[in-house]
Length: 109
Image (cartoon, rainbow, N blue to C red; front, side, top):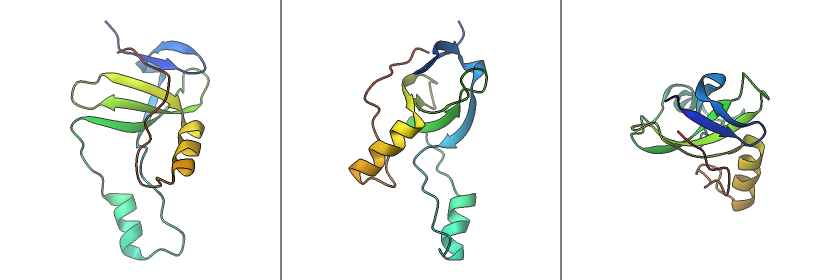
């Protein structure tokens, strides 16, 4: 059985329609940040074994960016939300470096 992701705009779609970008909790340093901050942002990533929030683009459909809550070990998709909604929720909560729990958009895997 193919893995499925529930796009909030297009509905249930096969994961092959999506392209992954990576960790959604990363925050880009300010332009005036020092070299070490930029080096860490560009080159260092946590290799999470477990649930994390990732940016995915629905490249084979609506082309919107989404945040997918996914278990990197089992590949189970727990939830999906529009990336703009995720960003607004992070800003409202004041959690610039932390992930936001999606409120809706359960997904199937």
